[in-house]
Length: 240
Image (cartoon, rainbow, N blue to C red):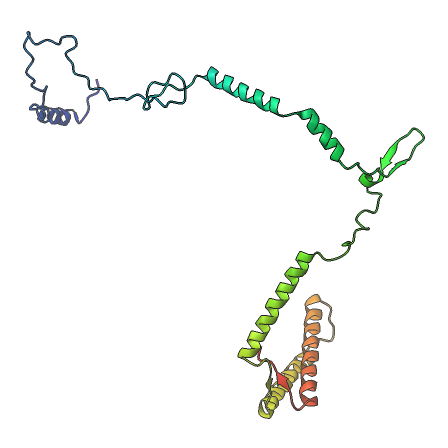
């Protein structure tokens, strides 16, 4: 038979905690004497006071705090009577006559018979009638789009004027700065030209072709900038 290793410790803990709640027990309440038993109508019950409401809307209501609401049958009868009165007051025949008299007769539809069996096509619904092309605003920009474009242009012009008022857009390029810029461009051009001369004669791969095209593009851009600086002695540049 299996016996736990903790058998003795469990028994010892159970015996030590056995009488820890022995002071707690049933509440000691003295019972009533046999002559004072509970009799009928001896318990005092205090009920809330409820007054009557004479101005009640529904028939049979006794008070304001606890009214007697109308039954479902009463509500249905009231609703049916109201609907009957409404139907009696409204004359649908006369209304239909007036609507027909005031109605504008529709225009005849543009129809075409396309077969000998009498098959008819309505050109407006089939899209064969130039309805949209004949409109006055066909092919024109809507007014709300023109307004949006105008607002954007106004905002852009206001921003440009604000920048011009803060700082002038162009400045004069001095002679010493122009000469330094020209010297730097020529130095860059010489370095790129030396690198271009060192390219292999045979361009038999894609990287070689791309490198040659990139160097040629850079040399052409530098030559354009050098020609502009040498051709025009006085220049105005933008810092941006």
